Image 1 (spheres, rainbow, N blue to C red):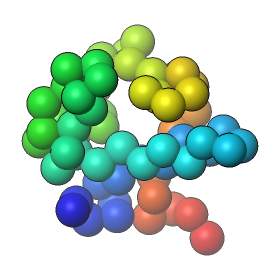
Image 2 (cartoon, rainbow, N blue to C red):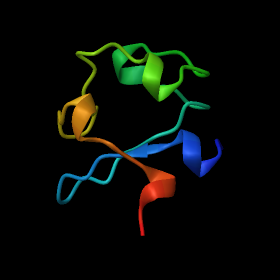
Image 3 (cartoon, helix red, strand yellow):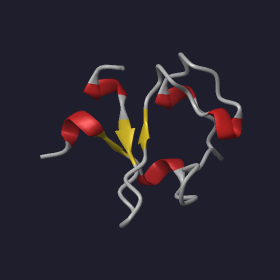
Length: 62
């Protein structure tokens, strides 16, 4: 599991998907090791479809 500073959470209610670069995103064929910043601009949450710009860094959450 990646460091929380490298993980990003979807803030949409009832979703909470966390992008972990150590796992990637199999649904969108994003290989393990891909940093969040390197995801395509049109990447979206594989659970609810929220856009990349909506995600928040896990380590920034209070």
